Length: 512
Figure 1 (cartoon, rainbow, N blue to C red):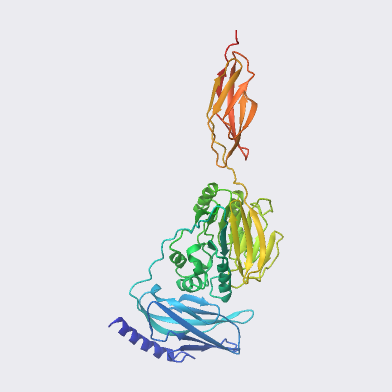
Figure 2: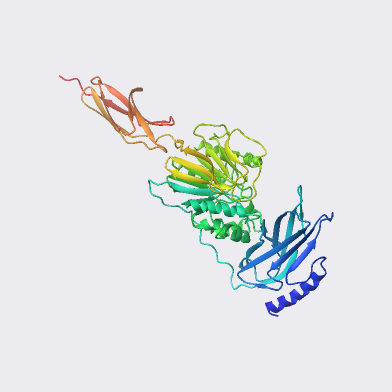
């Protein structure tokens, strides 16, 4: 029996069974009516497209409707294929594109159910269902391999960066944030994680990738993964498929800044000291310049209800602050918060690390359950995105809401690179110059940040201090026929010192 004949026989059996379902008429537009036990309201949810018996090929439009009597708020419609989660739609019109090539060829059942907001709780309806078949010649082709987007800007021009998370859910607010960002014409876009509801292939295609959504910035986007991307049955595979298999952690330089992107999900489990990610991060930060921006999904500091996550990330924050990171960008908490610069313990400190939480990309906003004096600016009622104008040495940041209102503005000055290493040892050579002088010269010392100068010592006593560019010294006033021991000590700004080899010189005899 051919696949189509087998499907026709299966569909006939399906319709016979469906007639027996309470409240479900057998029709081309499959509907299902159900009520909570209290009978307080009745919900009829229908799959209006595709019709029962449709053979699906390529991208297929799926439409559904829901009617509640008496009227109550509809929270979501949730779609499934063969019982496997496909997509959650958060507002009407309830329609999306099903990329059928992402599923195997054969017979399937497409279902939809509604979640109704009952004020203090939610109730989920019985599903409407239609039989369909999927027939595709080949699976979806893979995305191009990922490489970080590294924009080039003129040395005298700022790098314009947009950043936001928690917006790819199909809600109209997300579209408004996308429109606002597009008006800036940014050089680079940082998406801070979460594609709703479970980061599936269909949700990436519809809620992220559509041309009217964040996908319009795909060619300039460097993403991080959120917790919702780990929530579906295949785990984070759709995230990696969409972006072309990006690494969990990566970094690059642009506009005089060093950018770092991390995976802070619990499933990845790589935020503790001693983990491969933190080991990589330590080496990466120590090789970076003065200006460093790090982005990841979960905020180490939060007053929006995710404080437990911050506890888990405390070792990571300690490292970032200790290494002099200037900006940390996060999502996850659906609100905006700019924290005062802080040290590794979360104590306000001049030159500390500034955290900015921008989970305002268009999904539902979270109200703040508490206050914190370290939060300089915040809102839990405005969707918008962070606009960064980066120059070597500084960042001008603005949180701009939909409609173009600048809600918050600040300038962050890059802190000097943290100096962890002592300078390398200079190599000293000394020769006598007659009976009362000696000439000293040495090789330049290396340092992870920079040598600030040299101290010249004779017989254990300092006799001169010279700048980092000076590599010679002429010592005078010595006694004839006398041996002297010299050492040159390399210095850096952190107070590290490294002596050269010790060299002896014997002056010549007295004249006459």
